[in-house]
Image 1 (cartoon, rainbow, N blue to C red):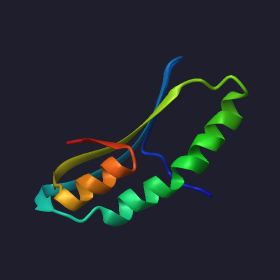
Image 2 (image 1 turned 180 degrees about the vertical axis):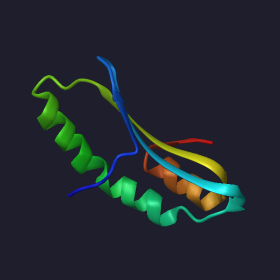
Image 3 (image 1 turned 45 degrees about the vertical axis):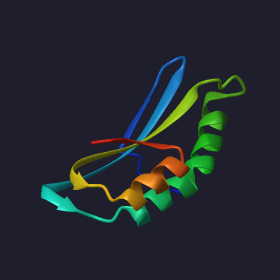
Length: 89
């Protein structure tokens, strides 16, 4: 499985994996497909991180969806919450 990660950061306690989306002008946009893709890749990404960092991988993974000029629908917010994806607008 391959996926371009828009933002990746880590320290001794936390790993941040973020997907970023933007529109030039404020607009409604369905993020259902994007949320679903990130949600389905959480486990494979976590496994790859554990493999890369070795046996003592104890960092908490924070999943983020970062957007600019996008009006989130209630359904997309619920999907993100269900997948443990935090929203930053």
